Image (tube, rainbow, N blue to C red; front, side, top):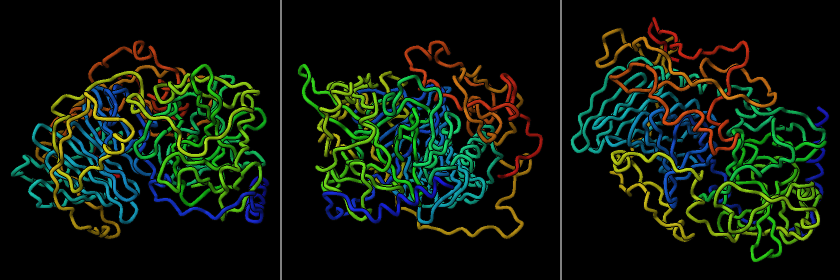
Length: 620
């Protein structure tokens, strides 16, 4: 309580004190330019998953916590699974052998294209007026209400199912929209003259149940303690660190098991985002929330992340650092940076003129601090007068690379001695470094390329995909040899927005089919469960998480699609566990598995099949 009173006093002081050099606030930037759009986040990976971004020279190994932009594509291998976070309580997951692309990502509209495999859309919260669209070769599926949805693709057929009260609209290439009600399934065969059949949805598969369990774990209330609701990536914090209360800053999270001398923004890479420019991609599994929200503080000998007072809506930033420049050293101009301290503004290097270079506190609910002085919240400060950043003067807090290495792979940082730090000056505006092809890659390692059948399939859509090609060309990034073919979608009219009334009190939204009623739906046959193998040791103590659902540390079940519902062991991995560890830093390998359950939590032994569903699976 005392820390809350201190923060409150800070806020009162902030409203009473004006900073030097104050000027009227600039015009508010657009939502996208100010970072008020939270990018779709790669939140979980298992097995071999490839990533491609326009401008990249080849498909690269996907990395957890990569912020996606329209045009990005993921492909999962034979044992791969990928999870994307599209909202605080909304996720899209790709099963094995799936190509999933992001075509649009706007505040109220997210559009994906699926050209192969199996995809789940688990929406536990859908704000009014928001839409998720899934475009497939046979139809565009418009989702406007919460629920669980499953998409299966075969050579010429798309099967779409709605569960848990969900409903959607299917629009094939013919333009004749069809409603998909709760617990219904629609099968669309053919594209030019599609054949459409609707029936009762079959029971949930093992992969569907894993999706339900995974989401239930992620949205536990304990995962959002001490942070603003709506902030992505908070589920990893309890697993990889501890919360403390500091009198000046309130709740502060300290990462566990970091090496001596570690500082924030030192283990990762700078990638080029077509919307936000230079963006930090950290190597740690917890590396989303602490690098895109809040501030870092050095207190009592440790680095901690301070989210600040809770705000109504957190605002994403590509990184929260101050860039520092200095004199040329042996014909190479180094680029340095340091984490922003408590209350300090970021000087945007992204966005439109009038926003770039203007001190900005977007999403920050605490006091505003300039040159160690609290300033009035209704004014901004001329950036030429911002010369003092608290963390810059913390020993070894300033790191950097040569300009020729910036944005070209994992940073090999150099520490700057205290004498040199005094020669550095803040960069006030855009960072004058052009991206190269490597800047569009999430990793140096090349990865699996999707088969031509997946890369070259067109889809049905209600909107054309957002095209960042002009912006990329302006930065010197053009189409590379490994780029997927630019296959234009077949545009169909968007369906009218519908409002589905909830079921009467005491009644379910759909009736489960009896055995034998649903064509082509088979009861899963007994088989051994897939095994993830022994989990890698996790160094250091960690806080005990709230109990996750059974199997969260295990390999996701393989989904063989409707009509082939047998749950069996997945194919052997493409490389051994020992080989997969070669050449990878410890932190990225750690992100490949969900933390194992603690003692007393339900788990699943290696080689043991999932509990047999003797009765019909109830809807959740």
